Length: 354
Image 1 (cartoon, helix red, strand yellow):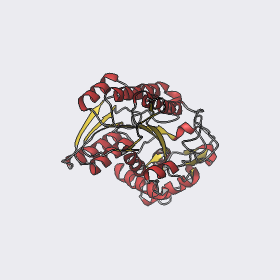
Image 2 (cartoon, rainbow, N blue to C red; image 1 turned 135 degrees about the horizontal axis):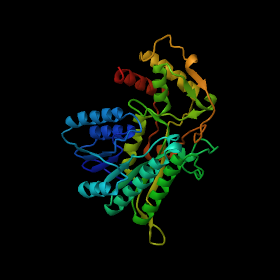
Image 3 (cartoon, rainbow, N blue to C red; image 1 turned 90 degrees about the horizontal axis):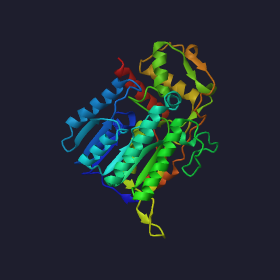
Image 4 (cartoon, rainbow, N blue to C red; image 1 turned 60 degrees about the vertical axis):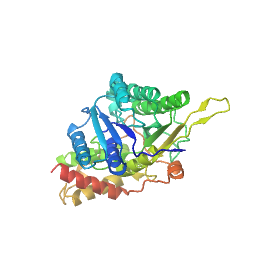
């Protein structure tokens, strides 16, 4: 593994107004010295743009307090090749973290174009730019969705993942294949990260914990899929960011094969909690924490607002991360408990929507 010192580097974070991207930028601004951080986001309205504005304001506030960090935000789309080429030509980033993507499994059934544009064309533009302006390390978001309906658990990066059950999953698997080809052809060190159900304060409203909360506050009924028989490996956003920062600093090593050609400096890791929770237990903890944070009244009748329904197309019954490779190579395993994570979310929600 090639060690990379992030201090003094130019770092590009795509999707920097997104949930993971904004938290990563804030972490880098706190911990990295004398760096230039470039953020790009198209600020689309897939969900409430006010949340993206909130995240950007938090970054700007930190930026004002960080004299050694140079931070630049660009409103732009990674699917626009001229924008990406111009960005790389101007800033010449040495470390790239590609988190920009159209997210969501169910949305990919009704809006496939958005996934092709961002997840395939956008990622291709990033890869081409990394080829033309050589980078020390490309880190990019994959997803636990690539495991599809694999029966073997926990999911290992050694498992075969050739049977996606949604277009979203297919685009993420495609990203891994494209990165492998570019790593092999152009000796670009790249690492893919399969994230498992990321949650936390200022997260994505299309995720279950946030969507459930919005509906319960309005007095609407929440639908619990697969009649509550879903298991999810919920991963708190701070744990995800910790994993990303560690992996940014450890690029796959460039090596030559017996044929004299480069072996692809390529790796893929799971980042998950390695502890799947039953969806009904998750909802029970969420309701307790929403009451504790005074988001909901103490006498709220949850049973009257819960409906158990069948599985939705594109969804999977279980996600469960084998994180042994992450522990072996980077000495890290996510550990935030579901209660601690949902408590942080409920307290943020109470403050943000007050």
